[in-house]
Image (tube, rainbow, N blue to C red):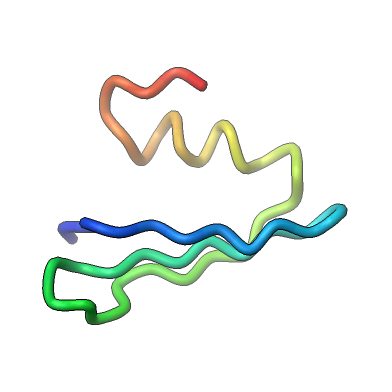
Length: 50
């Protein structure tokens, strides 16, 4: 799965993460609690440490 664009809908406790490929097709939709966002990106994006 190649994600070229990421969008995050920020809220108080629950965030929505959306990813799209280079053609704009949605390839990721994930709901995360505030404490799960940094670990998610640390695992999903090589070299990113928050």
